[in-house]
Amino acid sequence: MIEPGAVISTSALTKRFKDVDAVAGVDLRVPAGGVYGFLGPNGSGKTTTIRMLVGLMRPSRGVAALFGEPVQAGSAVLDRVGALVERPAFYPYLSAIDNLRLLGFTRGMTESRLRAAVPEALDRVGLTEASKRKAGRYSTGMRQRLGIAAALLGRPELVILDEPANGLDPSGVVEVRQLIQGLARDGITVFLSSHVLPEVEQLCQRVAVLQKGRVIAEGETQAMLQKGERLQVRFDSADEAHRAVPILASIGATTPAESDAALYLDAPADRGSEVSRTLAGAGLYPAELSLHRQTLEAVFIELTGDHVPPAASGAAPAAPAGPTGAEP
Image (cartoon, rainbow, N blue to C red; front, side):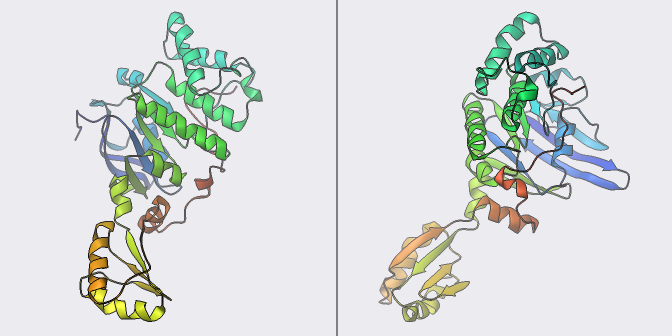
């Protein structure tokens, strides 16, 4: 069912290759504004889903819609969208300016519009000083930024980024994060597929987790993280910790792990005062009461049963394909 109020809406979206469903009935609703994270292990169907969203691939079944309009190749609604899908490819013997101008012409943009749009996009990604350099001399990080600049041509309302931090060093990852934050501040909706989970945790207000072509979890990022909150209660001695176990069990604060003089309770932060009062009533006074919250990496592993992919460090390269141009 297409939801008119959503920037991205899919219903039973499916893509079958021979006898395998790479995407197996994905239902998504991405609201306007902010950054939406799209996560999953390698091979979970993220890029295939994105290709269907931007009209590069037809679904076998189901519907993908942008701004309430079904997606088809050449749809006018795609003019409101900018996308970086996998690693961008450019003509190596052309400058960044000429690559973007050529791409703009292929999209039907006029000369007068490009005179303003190209410098604006290059400035947005920090490539103004290198704009006349041939793309073949760009580093991996610069090519990624040029790919994002291509996605920003025409001031899109929605930007879809597929692994934008691939191949970047730590400083490059920070630059991409700041760029995405700037887009969101300007009211652009960002749909972000990424393996750099600490960055996703900082950037995304909502996330969906894909596994084997299906959405297995979706919701507000902070709500997902709060589900794994635990209180750590540390005492001056292991004997005090041992005495505290049945007392805490009496108020429903379970103790899944015990380590020397510390207890770890499956209890959220808002129960901290209750825990302190109960212990004090029994003559026990903890030396420390602190909150431990799961990282998004831990949630990801728990949901998927998968190790965090190598690209979590931002170092793994993406597949050499993309819609932003083609090298001859």
